[in-house]
Image: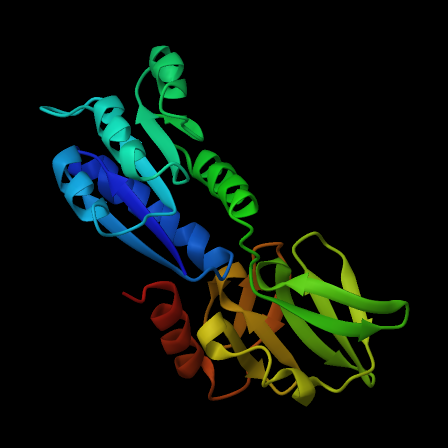
Length: 237
């Protein structure tokens, strides 16, 4: 479980950053908790008896600015990954004094948050959830977030990946049902298909369109159940 703090006095920016971090957590099946603060003193107070792994910290804040807040954090914690949020790159030099991990220019784009968090995960040795399957060429590890859907076809099970690649195994589909769980974002929408919900782009009562553009069916009578599972997973508290 990684613990992520966001400190920003601009509520709109704080909410936007939180939403993007939640998206990354969901897409990568990472176990994480997010804590939000609207001023540096609150963050420092919480960190007195609590360790954050990652801290997103606005630089320009009233009373205690981001740089001074980071200096206080560093007195007790030398390892937290501090990422500054700023409207200007001129603050980049100041960030080195507190061993900042990176900084994001506002308005922040999801691609930047994604890249920063991917690098943090590597630095913290956090591995996304994964599954190992036996293919014709040997054993293959796949991260959940790389899987679009799993299909049973002609006595083979085919894993379709975001990259466009496919992997085949002779193990039957039912052997994966206790490994690809609903709590991790998977849903068996048809007797021959298991879909990874975060990689769904669009759906109706009869079919699902994956982000890559491919379409898979929903079994008759399963449309409502899939819709409930989708919204429960993607918008859970």
